[in-house]
Length: 312
Image (cartoon, rainbow, N blue to C red):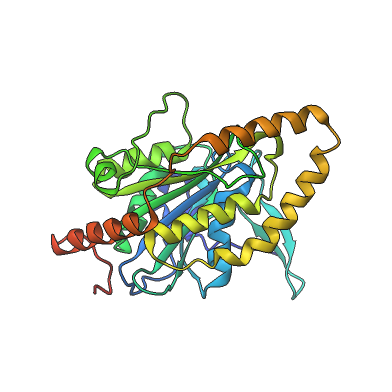
C-alpha cells in the first residue's frame, strides 16, 4: 500500500478539473500579528543553499507549523524533480512529492513570519506566482521579502556581501535600497517580483554573494549573512549568531582546501584586497533601515492596507 504524503484533493485525479481548482491547498488560516512573507527557492538563485537554508533555520528554531502548500502537479516535470519513496515508522510506503510549503513561525514582536520555500517550479510560472499572491493576500502579509544567493567574485575569508533592492521606485527610495539593474534571463524570483508589483504587494530582495570557487552547499556563512540582514530589516530575531561555530569550521575547511594551490591563494589575496579597499555599505545602516521599514509598514496599516488577521 502506498500513501500519498501531500494531501491533494480528489479533484487532482481529474485532469479536466485542473483549471478549476485552487493551486493552493490550505491546512488552515491562522490569526497572525503583522505578518511578513519570506520566500526562497532551491535552484538557480540559491547558491550554496544559503537562501533556503536561512528559511529552514528559522523554521527549525521556531514552533513553525504548515498552513498550506502549492499543489505540485501543474508546475513540475516529475522526470526531472522525481518524487521520493520513503518508509514510514509504521512500515507503510510514502510518496513524497516535490513540494513548495508554507509555514507560519510565530515570532517576537513586531512581526510573525510566513515562510514559503521549496524547489523552483519548472512550468507555468505566472500561474505559480498568482498562487504566491493568494497566500500573501489570504494571510494578510504586509510585505514580501525574497531571499537569494548567487556566485560572485568574493573572498570566503571576508564578510559575506548582502545586497538589497526593490523594483518599486518609491519603495527603493523610501528604504534606501537599490533598484535592480540586471537584464537577461531570470528565474522564479524575478518573475515573482513582477507579479507582486502588479498586485500592489510591497516586495524587496535580499541576496548574498557566494565565492564562486566554493559554491557548493552548505554555505553557513552565506546563510548567516542573510539571517543577519533579515533581522536588520524586519526587527525579528533570527538567532543568526548561533551559526558562528559552523561558519568558523567552514572557513577552516576552505582554507585547508585552497592552501594547496598557490594560484588560488594568490587569487583570493586579490579578492581580499578589493574587499578591503571597498568602503561602500551593502545596505543602509541597520538602525536607519529598520526604523524606516517599520514606519513604512505602519503607514501601510494606517492607510487601510492588509495588516494581518490579528491586526495591532
